Image 1 (cartoon, helix red, strand yellow):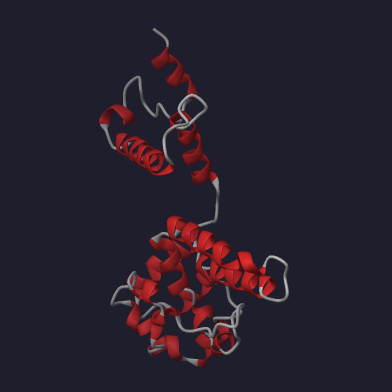
Image 2 (image 1 turned 90 degrees about the vertical axis):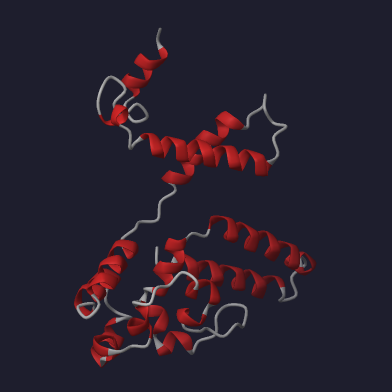
Length: 210
């Protein structure tokens, strides 16, 4: 999770380098960049920003001294407006490399040690922040949640109902998905004949049958 934000920035920069290097599609770059940025703004969530900000690798001086794809100078995550908007005050000590974070061992291990091990080792001075960091950076990258959304989308926007515009369809999918999540906190979802109806196919069949 901590690498998605940085990888996305690099990908856009790499595409820029390829297209602007005497490529026959050079005139299409502006439109492609607009599409990519629009897509990223749609899929970007707080966890991406928080994971990027909590990754010690992105604060390493060697990493920052190398230009990013597209010829853009790298900078600390705490100097990025989008990232800063998602941060909390507890991050000041980590971002400014104070205390344990400023030791030579912590700086060296930031580029060689796994993120979870690094926070477990050097996060003792900020236990609350370390706990959040470990939880966020432990999140695996999976497309399963996206596939579930597309499955829901297929019920709302299909061949028979294809006159819905994308914005309206997105809102309906959002409402449907959140109502489903809220239903999991009800007593009927945890107990009774409809227990976990959206997980157990046998329960769903019983609900459908007269």
